[in-house]
Length: 391
Image (tube, rainbow, N blue to C red; front, side, top):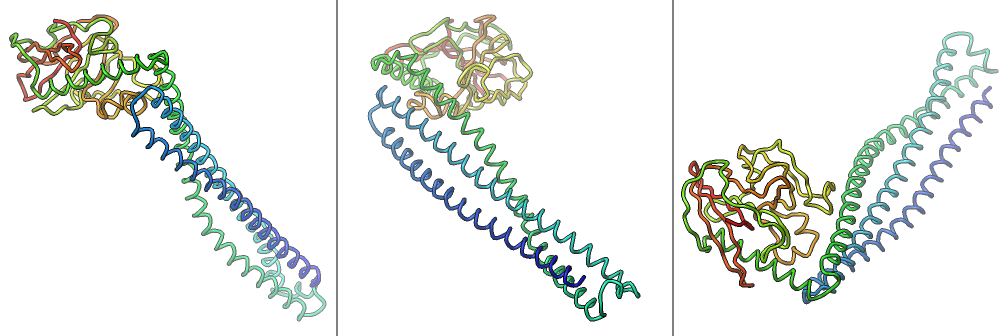
């Protein structure tokens, strides 16, 4: 019996040590290869980031913009590969740790059970039934106790590793979420490039016309909210009164039909969603496509009526928008100072609050007069502007 227990203990201990050595060796070789790949990806990412900076500093041409899209798409693909490698590397470590904890736990449980049985045998004559002499019995008993204590120490260390395991699982979840964002970004970049080529028909002249029109529009809008427009007082209007109509189709200061709605105080643009009421019907077309998940947030939280009848077609939000981040309009402005909306049911524009109505216009660098109406609100120092309209 003594020989059997000794052999059993030695075999189990050797098995655990060999398993651990194999796992560590596999991990080391695997990690070295994956770490090298991560290093290479990091170097390529840096190269493309430098290339994008270089292209951004060059002349604003259609070919340059397309080259930027291509470089950005390649950069995002590299970042996706990098994130996937990190997930794979982390997943391998988690799996190895899980297997090691499980294997040692099983071995410990088996030997702890045997030690417990021996301690029961030691309580009386049954000890002598298992061994030839008392010396053999006590030698085997203390031998298994030493193995058990060694396993306890190992188990404590691996239990601490379980904490690391949970942290790594959390890191893995973070990387998975990052990967989803990167994949959405890639889709957005591909869509933005396709839209540009569709708009310009790959024609440099048409691209320059788009840029000139957008710059003129932006110049005019900034001038209008800073008080530089030519205005005529019309009179008092109530909330919901018709004050203008949206221009149907493109105009000299707009590439497409929409109302540019601005809320301002002392010349500083405010987020219209802080004032307009929620719970209305709308279609979000502010991202790569109508209804896509990458569009600008539509989150009105105020109490004002809307300037157009619902359902609202929402084409650009306030601030750093999808269009600013992903399309050529980011060449013209970095911050959208209002929201762009339209209504399929009616072109009529309504006052969102009661106040004094003004009609105005401003001629930009292209000589085209951008028409607008403004309402100075009765109950606050806020003003609302309604652009790309007829009156």
